[in-house]
Image (cartoon, rainbow, N blue to C red; front, side):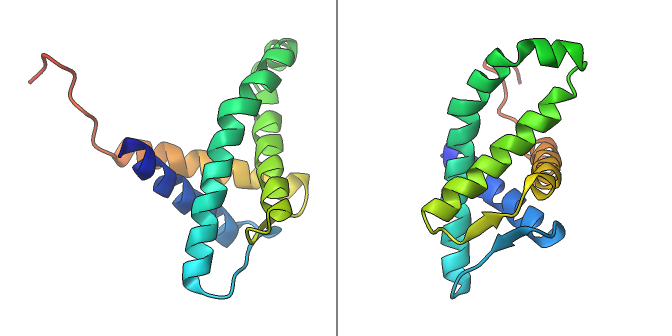
Length: 129
C-alpha cells in the first residue's frame, strides 16, 4: 500500500513539473489517458532511480566529492531525462526536450516529493506511544 501511495505522489510531482517547466510535456487524448500515463511514468522514474542511479553514483563518486555534492544535480537531471526518453520510446505521452528542462524538472520533482514527505504522517516506531 505504501508503494502505491508513493507512486501516486511521484505522479503528482511529475504532473507539477509538466505544469511549471516548459519542455516537459504530457499529452494524451483524455484526462484518464494522462493520469495513466503519469502513473506509468512514475513507475519508470522509480525504477530508473532504483536501478540506474546507484550505479551512476558509484561510478561518479569522485565527482560528488570534488564538487561537494553538486554533481548530484547533474545526475538527477540525467535520470529525469532518461525517464523521458524511455517514456517516449514506450509511447506513454511524456517527453523531456533536453537537459535544461530535465534539470529544472528534477529539481521540481525533488522539492515536491520532499514537501509531500514532510506533510505525510509517519508510522510510529514500535514501542513508542
